[in-house]
Amino acid sequence: MRKIAANAVRQPANLSIDSQIMKEAKGLNVNVSRAAEAGIAEAVAAEKTPLWKLENRATMDAWNDYVDKHGVPLKEHRQF
Image (cartoon, rainbow, N blue to C red):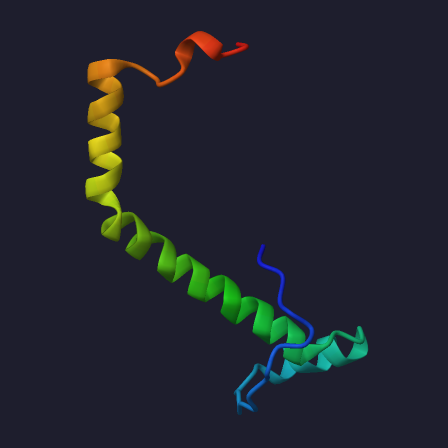
């Protein structure tokens, strides 16, 4: 899970949240802003992961081809 910087510049946002969840969160002293921020950050990361894989696929395929042809670099120094 990504840590969110405490000193990050924050932007106000209006959100519609299930009233029952909001009631429970307030009753449990949950910092709703930070919880929403964490959830949004997680959703952003989940969307970025497949994009990163797609953007870097050629590099990863080239590396895998290299290992298939030449073996793992520095294999003789492995301790396992």
